[in-house]
Length: 317
Ligand SMILES: [Fe+2]
Ligand SMILES: [Fe+2]
Image (cartoon, rainbow, N blue to C red):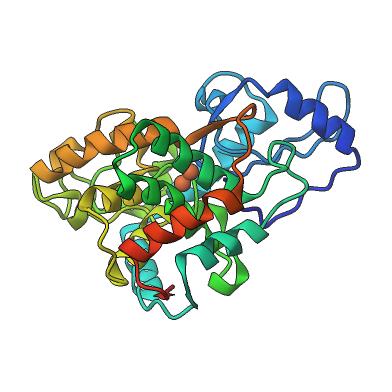
C-alpha cells in the first residue's frame, strides 16, 4: 500500500473512478512507489498515484509520463542511496526514539494515511496488509508466523510521516539493493548509479566490496527504506518471529534477489532456505482490485493473538 505525502490535485472523482475501473483486472505489485501522471489523452489532468505496478515493470518501453515519474524516482534513489547514507539512517532510526506503540496501533497509524487523490486506492492501507495476510492464511493455515509477517511487512512506511522524519519517497519505497559493493546490472534503471559516488569508489565498487563471499545478507547493508526499518524495529524489540519472517520483512523489495536471482554470492546457507519463503510471500504481496474487502473487526482478534505471541505489548519505533 502506498502512503502518500504529496498530494496531486484532482477535480474529477468520476474520471478517477473510470481510470480505476479500467485497471481493475491488473495485478499490482506492491513496490509502494507513488508516481504522478500528467495529462491523459483526453486532456483530463488526472492524478496518477500508484504502486510500482506490475505493468510498470516494463521500464524500458514507452515513454509515458508515468514511466518518467518512475524513472525520476529511481534516478534520485540511485544517486542518494550510498553506503554512508545507509549507515547514517541506520544509526538515526536504530535509536528507536520516535514513538512507543503496539503493532496494531502502527497498523492504525498507517491506516490513517489514506490518500483521497489516489485513483487506485480508495481503500485504507490496512486492507493491503490484511488481504496479503488472509490470502497466505488461507493457503498456509499452519504458518501463523507468516500471517503476522504479512500483516506487518509494510509498517515501515510510517517513515513517510512527519513524526518519523517525513523521509522522501526514494528513502522509503521502491526496489532495494545492497550498498557497499558493486551495483548489479539487474537493478532497475541501473544507469543512474553512475551518479552515485560509491560507484567510483574502489572500496565499494567491486563484486564483493566491503563484504566477503557467502557472508550472509544480515551482514550486508541494504538501501534504506521501509523494509530495513521494519526489520530493525522487529529485531530490536525482541520479536520471536522465526528468521524467515525477518528475512521476508527485510528483503521483500529486494527484487534483484528474489526476481532476478542476483547477489546470491553474498548469501549464507540459511539465507537460501529463507529465500524459499520470500518467494512464497511475494506471490501474495500484490493485490487485485477485484479482491473482496477484509472485515477488519472480524479478523482483528486473530491478528491480535499473533501479535501477542510474537511481540511485546509496546514497541519502540
Ligand atoms: Fe506490501
Ligand atoms: Fe513493501
